[in-house]
Length: 231
Picture 1 (tube, rainbow, N blue to C red):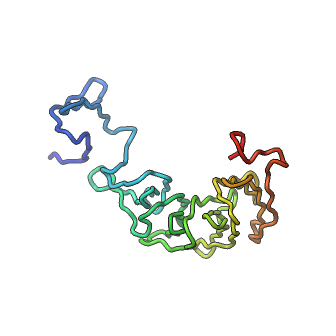
Picture 2 (tube, rainbow, N blue to C red):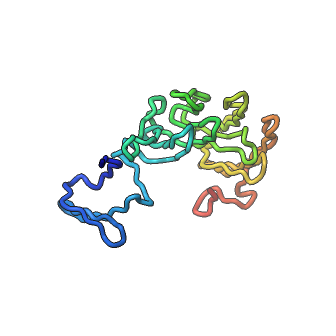
Picture 3 (cartoon, rainbow, N blue to C red):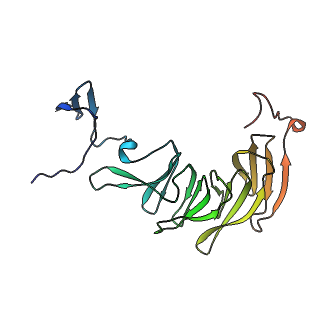
């Protein structure tokens, strides 16, 4: 017999008629518009109708689900059993959430209250750093057991050991306001500063010791003000 396989939300208005054209598109006539639908569609939109809230900041695949960080928290996206998607807000991160970094071992979440870690099968993420908002955690290039993250107060080096991430080293920013971090070479981190010249940090990735910090400003030919200032 026949059964309902999928529900597709077309509009909030009344659908008056449906027809299919020679190219396989489905056309729907509503109270005020005509809508063209492709099923299955190569594009999908996930929005408030699915439970997602806020401005999307980052996404990750982890533990059999898609995870989304937004200005309203962290959401877990799964199938709803009717051919669509449901977004579930995580109670442990229901304010602004920022970067996500995930692989099969764990997921790091930078959010308003700090840096959290979620392990496979866990329902609640554990806090690794609780001294304020943490932005985007980043993998260290070529070192799958290392990552970096930064807050308004610290730059952190994390190491995965014994089945879990941990903050191995952290350095005070002393007034810096980090905009981004790039890694042109192993152990070399270029840090853009909203309040001053960019800096190059060199860190021994084996010991976790910071070996060098160097600022690049007007004396090196880089302006720190005006339209030519590097970001």
